[in-house]
Length: 470
Image (tube, rainbow, N blue to C red; front, side, top):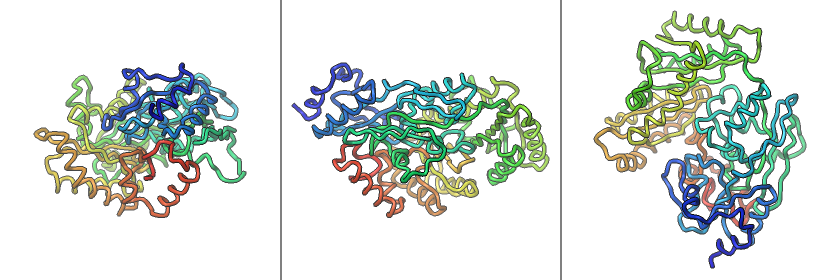
């Protein structure tokens, strides 16, 4: 009997799933880049059961892979291929524990689906600002564990800025309870920060207290063609000034990215009459019933078009048109997948340097792989660009991607580093970016991360092989 099988025999049978047809859904990563093995998936229903599972597996020497919605792009929630690890899914922990409308906060179990929390907050005339393309399936515990970003970072920040408190089961099965949703609590180390972005390597998040915001009364959404990518930071600055910092999203979309989607999804229509090499999806929102946000955006566009900064644009006249604009932005990855997939670079630089990075990185690709198709888009408001490269039509996708990642991707990451940027803006490290962390991470920070890992998880049993090398 293996250590995993021995541990499973000590757990309540009703929380253990050994049927490999079911288990198979938990052992492949979101992009199917990596397929692991596991004897079972364990689905505890309470925090006490999570503690029991962790204590039992720790005593038997069985490594643990915590898993939320399994939407990680870096295989952070995928077990290894030797079958020695067991997956703990948090999907059964899905209760909303409290909504405090006056405090603008909610306390929820880790397994709650993000879109469900949007609905719960909306029923109280509030909103949870975290918004992602995978929100119909991702879970809030995973969002916090990976410090998820999304489309609203420019105003509300990443997941880290929305977390008021956490409840975490530690590697020895003990419980850290720090769920009090206080804005001010200056009582020593802010230890919850260790688990935000920790990708389950220091403990299992079982609940979170989160900041809410007032639901917008007015939302203005515009799809804009800009004359020059160099105008991005200027236009963002001007949009913030005109709207009084009401901009919630400022998304860049390259024409090549848009064409990949429109070429494969012929039912979709181009939102503008005039085409351009560069587009911006701008959204501003306010909870005030007095402020004239529409007038502010109209004035912005009038001035920018008068100067030639914007060459064409459309303001959503209704929710259907707004949804169409966002559908185009959020489904760009689908266009890449339908075109053979892409080599992904989740890069961030200062907002003021973003246009320069895109220009220089595009030159690197054109010099080294002139037939490759660029798909560049991202969250300009926070300096995050998804600089993706799609194989040319005559290439074998797998061969092209392997060669590109070996020869050209390092040049792109080096450029980001030279510009003071990051090789991982919002996807995290997981398993697939460990080498990049060793190459481009600050040595002092990496060394401290390893010391923290050793101090909290001395047996190395919590999501091994992710974020920090053994």
